[in-house]
Image 1 (spheres, rainbow, N blue to C red):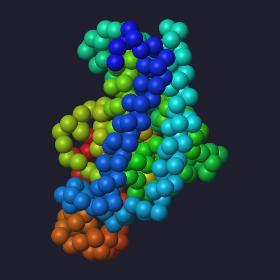
Image 2 (image 1 turned 45 degrees about the vertical axis):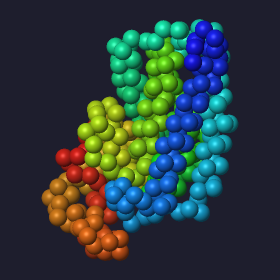
Image 3 (image 1 turned 30 degrees about the vertical axis):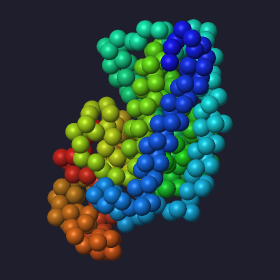
Length: 293
Ligand SMILES: [Zn+2]
Ligand SMILES: [Zn+2]
């Protein structure tokens, strides 16, 4: 793309929207194939809530809601960003790429802002005045898949997802290339948080880019606590108590959790082990050694 030939309105308004949509469906459908086919088995074996399979009957509704959100809710926000960029407000469009140092500090600011905005908007959405109306839809999947990341009521999508995502680049006056990178990273990060699989990888444990899904997966399973993305504000406000307790019990009884997580016994035996030991919550938590915030 060339900033000299493509007007900022299209580069920002349409180009950034496409970055989000293409990234979302590319990763989401890739994970969906794993969810539906249960292959390759080496990857499917990493499923956190192993006893729960994705309900195919909900797929059509999930896809319809995602398309509605991307076209009716997200696109107007993107076009507004394009309209503002055309007038020199918000996201910057220049032919020169930004300096690496600027990309680095701005990504750090975006992650910090995302943690703050997502945590508090998420807590508000869990208030009894708003939960039923606006947030219950997102919690429809207690064992989420990657495509569930943006499965939400339009009000939640706008206030809890889109505004935290776009305000960082707008307020920092980030370059369109930096913003595109941030949007792609954020979409992939959000899908990793919902994908339902635990991948042990040094890359996925980079501070600030926590892709380890156990933390948010736990929120979907128990509904309360773990409201943030990277755990800092949950630690600050003490809303990670159940998560910490689950990790502590796991640490004390690792052999029981190992059995509940698979130990060569098959799905029925794993479920029985969880019920017998009351480890439903514990078996989804990764070991202390692998969990990072
Ligand atoms: Zn979620
Ligand atoms: Zn929630």
